[in-house]
Image 1 (cartoon, helix red, strand yellow):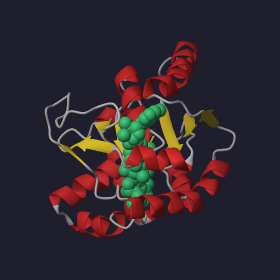
Image 2 (tube, helix red, strand yellow):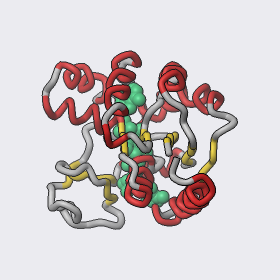
Image 3 (cartoon, rainbow, N blue to C red):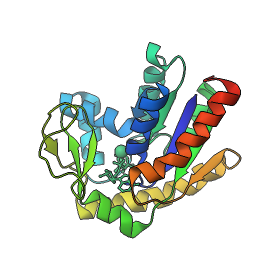
Amino acid sequence: MKIILLGAPGSGKGTIAELISNDFGLPHISTGVLLREEIAKGTETGKIAKKLLDKGNLFPDDLMIEIVKERIQQKDCKNGFVFDGFPRTLFQAQQLAKITKIDYVFLLKITEKEIVARLTNRVVCSKCKAVYNKNNYTKNTCEKCGGELIIRDDDTLEVIKKRIEVYKAESAPIIQFYQNQIIEVEFAKTPSQFYAPVRAFLKKEVEKHGSK
Ligand code: AP5
Ligand code: MG
C-alpha cells in the first residue's frame, strides 16, 4: 500500500504514520525527519535545509524529489510506504505521479488553535524521533529507546505561525490534485481516537485487495 498523509503542521501526520507503519508493516517516510537527519549530520543538504526549516520555509522541490526518489527505491519500500509531509507542493505531487501510483490519500483535519496548543507542547526523541506531548507524557526520556526528549527548533510560536501560513498557501492545489482519492479524517482529541477510522478503513482494504 502506498499512502500519503496530508495535513497542517501538528495535525498528527507523524503520529498516525507511525501507527500505520507498526500495524501494516510499511516504512514511515517523513521528509521533515529526513531533512532534520541531514541537518544533524551537517551535510551540504543539511546546511541548505537548516536555513529554510528554521524559518518555516519549504526545502527546494527539485532537491526534495531527488531525496524521496532515492528513498522509495530502497528494499523496504517494495510493498509500499507511508508518506508524512510529502508531497507538499503541487509540483511535488505532479512529479510523484510520474514515478509511482498512490493508493490512498488521507487528509488530517485540525483547527489552527489546536495546532498551536499541540506544537508548543510537543517533544521528540533525539534518537528514534518518537513524538510525545507534554500534556500526556511528563518523562524526560523516550519510553521506546531511552533517548533524550528535545523541542524541535521550528516549534517556536513565530515559526509555527509561518509554517501554518506556508501550509495554507500550498495545500489547496494539492488537495485539488488528489480530489478523487482524498479520505478526510475528522479531528479527534486523542491519537487513538483519531487513528481508529484510518485503521478500520485500511484493514477493510487489505481484506478486499490484499496488502497490494
Ligand atoms: P515536518 O517535519 O513535516 O513538519 P510539519 O508538516 O510542520 O508537521 P509536524 O511534524 O510539525 O506535525 P505532524 O503533523 O507530524 O504532527 P505530530 O504527529 O508531530 O516538516 C518540517 C519542515 O521541513 C517544513 O516546515 C519544511 O521546511 C520542511 N519540509 C518537510 N517536508 C518537505 C517537503 N516535502 N518539501 C519541502 N519542504 C519540506 O503531532 C503533533 C503533536 O500533537 C504531538 O505532540 C502529538 O503527540 C500530538 N498529537 C497528534 N495527534 C493528536 C491527537 N489526535 N490528539 C491529541 N494530540 C495529538
Ligand atoms: Mg511530523
